[in-house]
Image 1 (cartoon, rainbow, N blue to C red):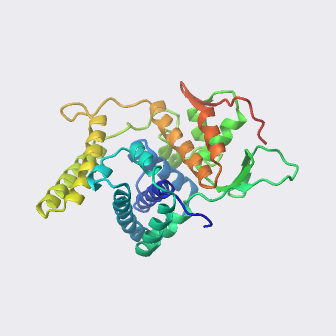
Image 2 (image 1 turned 30 degrees about the vertical axis):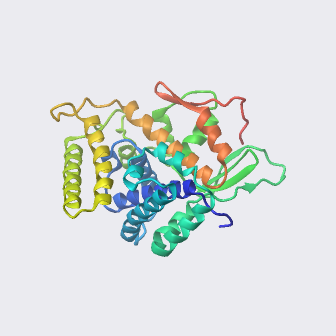
Image 3 (image 1 turned 60 degrees about the horizontal axis):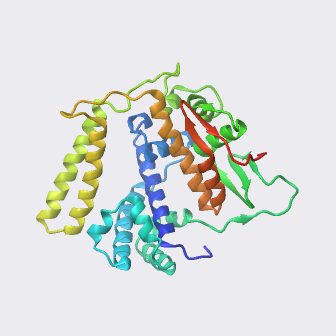
Length: 335
């Protein structure tokens, strides 16, 4: 890399790699994406299954290093910001990112060197996800705006910058929306079109949250998923108590933060008394999944310096009823 990343760059890359590693672990364990609630992890698992990417044999080591790396990063940040570690880990993602933007840029490079020295395998993946300098477009007579297939991936050019990208479900969605610019595209059609451009198989339908006839094939959560969540809450409580017994204040605070999130998830899917909430409709399940996939594609655009292109898609795409629509203003003619 020819530049020093900021702490915000490092944090976003670290979170992205942790997401990839967690999804890869679930993939290796044969977990069905339909078993997960809508969110970034489910969307990434769907992309991983859809792309047939191989899972690294070192995924276990990456997971261990990743957790340690995240903890080390946050401790270094707490020192740099001059705030208590417990206070730092209790911040929301938005609050933490706002704090990271206040740190002088050169700190990022210093922290990266520490991480490289202690967590080499994970740091290698981390560097791969850091933003690079964008590739400037040369005058080759082609359109200023290009979105086309390139081998197993995509070639995208816009706003004076271009890049090559591996296949992601989010880019499949973007292509379909671009072709129908100004017109609503049903969510079920988006999902079906992204399923390798052929008749949706049972596996593809299951991963997307659909049944073969286009209706809902299973509830958002089932009793097994709720029981797994309850078990994770119980295990987290046990870890907190153990940390308190040995006087590990830092570890206890980290898991209290995790416990709060787990309890929030449990409340979101159950009613008082532990009964499951009513099942969401198919559209309610597809909407956040499509949003997450498009956001992942936009994050990938930003990682190579195509920030303006990512922002363009984010402000030009919206959900309307049971559809998504790409409606840029002013209109853009894509090739």
